[in-house]
Image (cartoon, rainbow, N blue to C red; front, side):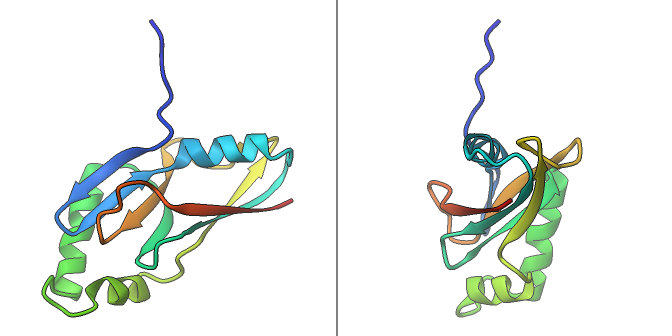
Amino acid sequence: MTSVEVPYSIASALPSLTVLDITNEVLHEVRDSGHSDGIAYVSPLDEVGLVRVQERESGFFTDLEELLTRLVPQEERERERLLCMLLGPRTEQIPFSGGELCLGTWQRILLFGFDRPTQPRWELTLLG
């Protein structure tokens, strides 16, 4: 049996929320950087996106979409920008040691988008 590691995968594709799992891509970049210890800052390149470390659990995404719809209705003008403002900082800081990300067993690095990105667009800044 052969296993293949997918660089990113769709964690959730709901009507008003798209979540891409970019953990494997970030890990490869950290390993290839030559830094062994430090902090990885992962930021979205799209104006209406954000990065979070979270468990990849489908019920969470559905609940989050429902909450966001109650906070800012779908028909609201500039909805995506309002959501980004309400959800706080867009960048996530992830420590790494020995070239490995310091994440919990089930934690993943997720790129949240509100305008249906076709590919993950993010940047990585390493401090180490």
